[in-house]
Each structure stands twice: as C-alpha cells, then as structure tokens.
Image (cartoon, rainbow, N blue to C red):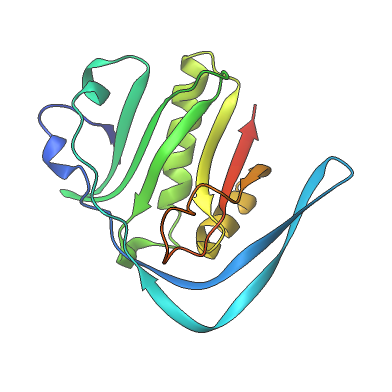
Amino acid sequence: MVMRMTHENIRDYNKSNESLVVFGRIIPKYENENWSYTEEIFSEQYIKQYENDDIDISYIENKDKAVFFYYEGNNCIGQIRLRTNWNGFAFIEEITVAINWRQRGIGTELLMKAIKWAKQNNLVGLMLETQDVNLSACRFYAKNNFVIGAVDNMLYTNFSTANEKAIIWYYKF
C-alpha cells in the first residue's frame, strides 16, 4: 500500500534507507544528440550507504512537494520524495526500498505514484539524478523507460573518495 506522508506517519521517514552493493557502473556516451551507455562490472564490489536526510515537514504542507511511503502491513519498506522543478518536471529527490524487499516491484509502484502525482500537478514528466556507480538503480530507471538527459562529471569532485559521475535521467509523458 502506498500512502502520502502525514504528521501521523512522519516517523517512517528514512526507514527504508539501507545500503546498496556497488558492483559496476554505466559508461554513458553522447553521439548524434542521443545518449547510450555500456556497463562495466567491477572485479571487487563494495557497500555504499547514503546518510539519512533530515525530516522536512514542508513535504506535508506544500502542494509542490510530496513524500509517499510504501507499506507492507505496518512496516514502511519504501519511500519516494519528489517536488516540482523549475523546468516543468517532477524532480525525484529520493527513492528507496529496504534491502530485503528489492526486486519485487515496489520501486515501480512508487514510480507509478510519482507519475500520478506529477500529472495531477500538470508536470511534463519525471527527472532524477543518480550516480554512475549505482548500476542497479541505472538499470531500474532504464527498465522503467527513463532516458539519460545529461551527465555531470563535476558534481562529486569535492569528495575525494567519490569516483562518480552524476547521471540525470528523464521520463517524459
């Protein structure tokens, strides 16, 4: 079941933020005004954990923002956080699924909820950013008909341990 974040369930914010295994990266290529990519599988895997975000109650009260939780019974096992963006797209700031619940369609259901929300807000599609080394996420977005719109090779250069590029994905209605 997918439910919007309210004051009553705000405690579930960040519950599904769990680590991921980094096992490869995409290598994007821009040619003839089109993006494509190949994959590089790493010889050694590593674990990556994103920090929890501070709870922002404006996602409850602001019509241009929303957080939706995915519940299995009373357990929050997924989350998607989005807002309207200046370019007419809904910007997905975060999408997470608890590690033991991945590969079961929960992320896709959260994307469907984001699409519905974006259409209700008269937006033209969805957009998001992820790292090239989050290969499972890149595969997920491609499988759900997102396309690469840009690559930013400077976004993470301030972090000496991050050998990553930002990939901007789009899904246009």
